[in-house]
Image 1: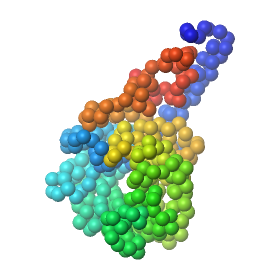
Image 2 (image 1 turned 30 degrees about the vertical axis):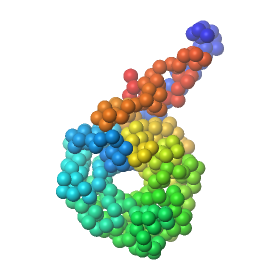
Image 3 (image 1 turned 90 degrees about the horizontal axis):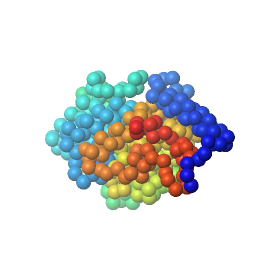
Image 4 (image 1 turned 180 degrees about the vertical axis):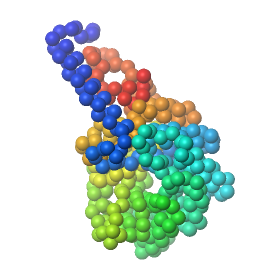
Length: 372
């Protein structure tokens, strides 16, 4: 088949496509605006490329590469940037502190109208870890300590050898210490996707009352389906309503999704449909084992489906391709030509049966994510 002839039908199709491009451009352009003008609830983007993401690289990033990546992610408009652990000894603590200082400084680039970047550091539920995180965040304008603890019986038995009651006490104590040491405290229920739902509710309720700003349910083994992620978040939120009432405040809910079944990005969006208002992602989905939910995929899909999800983020979409390419060069991670959102094949119109205007076969214009 050759190119389509200029018939009345193809001319009508061209007009429809042009109108669709105009609507899409208007829709996507509003996402870079001040989030205070958004009519929908805000969806926070929590990037953990420099923490969980580094676990999937063949070699650690240099400190300079980490700082450059942190600055690019800040300029992209992520809301929270997890920069690492603060438990690797004095040298590790110094590196995390330097990244936190650079990323959170007043001179670091941010999109117009964006709120201050929140810098997060991961901690075990141990006083020494939490105190180290607080020290690492000392020069960050807005800091968050992310405390994690096993939620499933299998992880509790293998890692802690304690009772469920002791886990509840340990979690509440750790979160209270984190909340006193930093402006924000997050609790992550490790392996929450395989935890007993009743115990997960008790655990999330305990940390909500202890002062958690954000409660995250982690699909540590990457075994969720999207509808399971949605159901899990709905159930956890409903079960914790009384705890939030006793604490006289609402917590934000988050999901941390791994990609062992290739569903991390879809599961993150499922969690958002279930009421999560933060998603945890990495550039190109790098991370432990098969990786994490992909920043570029979750961001674009959420931007194109704000009405269905009931929330909107403020990420600068036109910076996605550049940030992904720069990180790929630093990390030595090849980007497949057929990669969703930022792969080179998206620039080209397919041959064979895919004939006619390119927009007939596109969910978005590659220029929307910065591909020229």
